[in-house]
Length: 89
Image 1 (cartoon, helix red, strand yellow):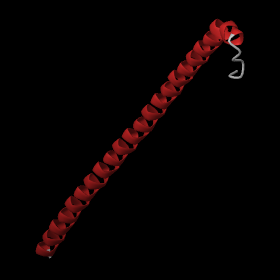
Image 2 (spheres, rainbow, N blue to C red):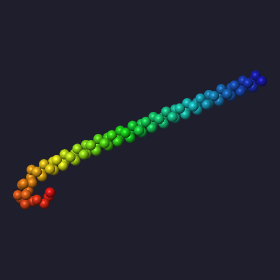
Image 3 (cartoon, one colour):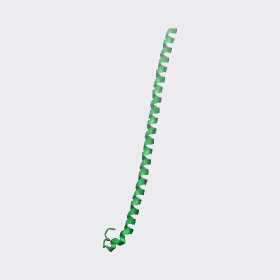
Image 4 (cartoon, one colour):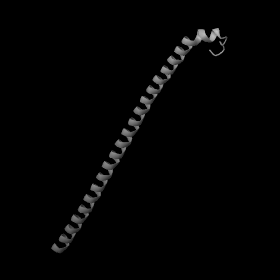
């Protein structure tokens, strides 16, 4: 009887150790999943903020080009009208 109880105890301890290992594996998997998800979210946020900065720079560049074009038209309009070339604006 005592022998059977010892064998049962040994089995329970082995089973508990196995469950502990499984729990550690699950915990490590959850942590790595959380890390990957956080990195992906950061990457998306980082890319979208860069995209917003590019749009801002692009719109600033477009505005500067419009201003140069207006300036050019203002400077040379009289000259071109005098030359008979008023078709371009």
